[in-house]
Length: 88
Ligand SMILES: [Zn+2]
Image (tube, rainbow, N blue to C red; front, side, top):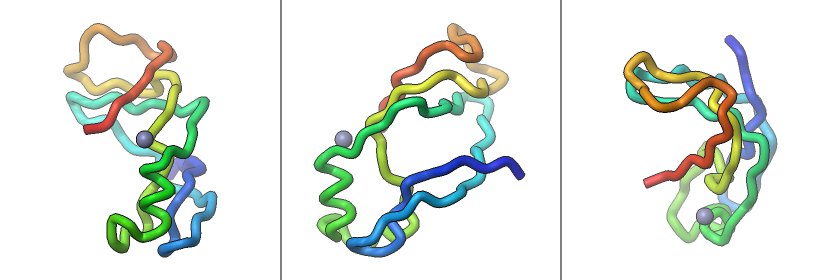
C-alpha cells in the first residue's frame, strides 16, 4: 500500500507527521497531492480540544496541490492540474 505523510492529531495537545494510506478516488472524487498547506485557527482549536476529542484526525485543510487521481465520472479536470480543494 502506498503511503503519504500527514500531520495527525495524536491526542489533544499532541500532533505528529505520520504515514497514512494514499486514498483511492471514488467515481465522483479527485485525490489531490498537496504541495503547500498551512495550519489555520481551526486546526489550533482542534488540537487544543475545542471541538472535543478528534484523535487520529488529519490536520491542514488549507492546501494547494495537483490532481493526483480522478474518479471515472469526473469531467473538466486533468491529472497534474493545479488544484485548490475546499472542504464542506
Ligand atoms: Zn481553515
